[in-house]
Amino acid sequence: MTVCEAPGKVYLFGEHAVVYGEPAVPAAIERRATVAAEPRDDDHVRVEAQDLSLDGFTVEYAGGTGDRPDVDVPRPLVEAAMGYVDAAVEQARDAADAPDAGFDITVESDIPLGAGLGSSAAVVVAGIDAATRALGEPLGRRELAERAYRAEYEVQDGQASRADTFCSTMGGAVRVEGDDCDPIDAPNLPFVVGFDGGAGDTGELVAGVRELRAEHEFAADTVESIGDLVRTGEDLLAEADADADPEPALLAELGELMDFNHGLLAALGVSARSLDAMVWAARDAGAHGAKLTGAGGGGCVVALDESDATETALSFTQGCEEAFRAELATEGVRVVD
Ligand code: PMV
Picture (tube, rainbow, N blue to C red):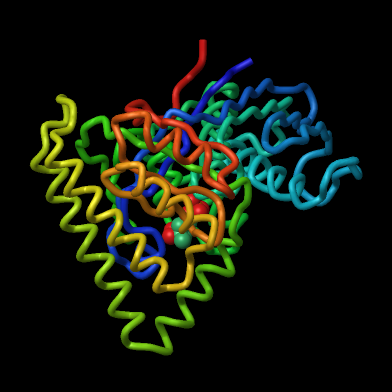
């Protein structure tokens, strides 16, 4: 049995604008998806998933999609999770030149699903890594990230940037601009996450921004402004000492940019009442800055605060289901002994 675990991520800056070629800076966080893969003697794939939501499930089917038995769990959840596991298995089969390889797969995750924390990317990255290693064909990180991107792209009908999968593979903070992805140095930022218990519809939200941008020049300008803001943030990170605790001045400046980024995302129509409430609760508690992370519409916000005040305030905020501190995951996907 081969077990790999990959981190989720927060967007420090740049979601949505990244779809139009602007840069974005996601950062991996110490919340991980764990995938165990055991090769089988036949071409079946048996998937057992726990903690992907409140319900776990087990399902077995013979190679490829479309041949699954009915299972007594919410269909959208099963379809979503199965889609990602399927796509990961297909990428592993292709990479290892083993089209008939079968697996027993177990998925566990402590990353809220579909909430802007890169849960699906983490499952895909850990899944491809575990399955290729189980077949004795481990991949280099760049190839793993590329294959994970292709898997997400396929499941999400082309609505995927490379940000989540690259960040989950590499760990730390990364920079994504179009097809160019690179790790960047960043100090261990004091991330605090607030989760409203829900999820936005990424496809719908991306389509909404696309329409606005096509219709109004000021919306297109807003997208460009997000790009300018990301470049300013990148410069700040580049000047910082990645091995030391972040200076208060750096946190203040990054926080200001996060606040600005949230405002621009809200202008593009992708925030939500619950997200705005959590952002304001974090700011009132003294956070350096706060913004939604990911597609928006519901899900998570990320704030910067080295004290416990923001986490405590969020946990008492109406609409916040869970608040937690999230360490920067300096290591990306890794094998679990
Ligand atoms: O919600 P997430 O973590 O899947 O992020 C979506 C980010 C978008 O920029 C809106 C879309 C994308 O694929 O980059």
